[in-house]
Length: 583
Image (cartoon, rainbow, N blue to C red; front, side, top):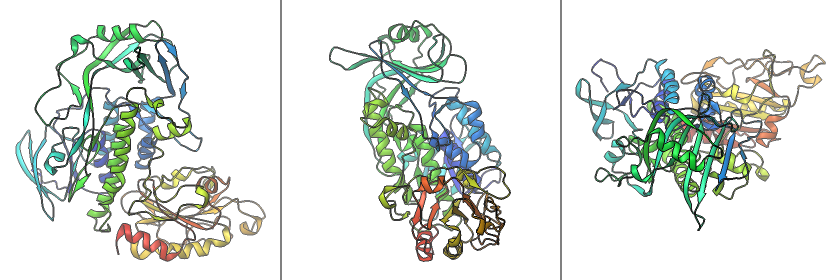
């Protein structure tokens, strides 16, 4: 695709919200040329989507900019719930200690700023006031017609990704169905400050039930960075109510700019529902919005794909929408990168729909159920509920591109599950324990080989199977069980694991290693190791992954297990990687 300034790109991303920015940033991080366009002249200063789930923070860790988000966000500690003025049991959003991040809240414009600043590091800027008008695809690419400040432009790209929201031009151009419905209620959003003394970092949900038990009034407050600052949502009063807009594409979802609630409207709801007397002030922004629930029949067709609100819309309960869209974009981006490099197996791009559409379907269904009563409406164990809200239970079991058997007795993650973090990995040179996510950060596929010290050579033989099909695209690490023994260390004292030094650059950014490279000191083995070696010094890896015997785990670029093979045979690894990289 040739731009008027001579730049070329293989992917055109339409829409520069958090989802489109994630897609573009992940493509650029892997060295893929792309353009990102947006019809708006500037970033909107609205605190729309504000919840940041722990799984999204893991994604940003893997990409390399999580620290900026941690410094800008506020810790979401839980939720205070009130029904007809009576306090209900408090929900504390506590996660297992091995989960590296907690829940957070951040205004959407801050999320966009952080991801955009990361994208700019790669020399890519959002092309503002530029809109996709139409497109036509063929076997080799997509011809797109854009309009922007310089007039109309026809561009050619190999792939088109629509992250252009609920009224997506890309979705309409593909002819995708978008079935669902709309909620009859209208709501107000406002970004205000209040002077109550409720616990800091807790969301507030206050409801009123009518005589029949139905919710007829509701106030939801999400804490934002700043003193006493919240993003509040509530029902629209009669004087601001209006009939749904007619015409257009029939999708009634999102903000309506014509009606702007005033501070008095917000104060009236607080007077009715606030758990204690309170005064609202310093309103930064307000709007009226409507909610629909819809899902596309497929997430792509040929060389054109949709993600985020272009693919699924639903109630904002539990802050699932933006986070689900960010995961859509990440799942798609690494697969597109391999396809553009000519390294993807024929079915890899098709797995985007196979993996992400069931997730969208589950999220739409769950948020619709929870719309009236909140996240507690689902009769789940509270620990499972919190893990699900954190999006840590999203997985791809049964995906056509994952392989291997479930672990015996259900212990540990299976193929398609999220690869959990763990600590206590020891290395000779690092004088501190490492976390597994430290080993994965900035990398593509990583083959983790677990076993006792004497099994290292056998593990290395299995690792050599990736050479032919992975072409240097897979990093390899061995994780040996327990601390080094005296006989292994050769010194009579316990030593930490090998250096983890690697000698070959992986595809994209980060470092990988080609199987069979001799590096490190052998995790205290008293000899050179054929692969980088770490010690599971506290047994956390063995416990979290439910493993005792020699086992191979393939961790995909998006942090999910592509394969779990016990024993780790060369044929099994070759078969898995042929499904990803082709023959």
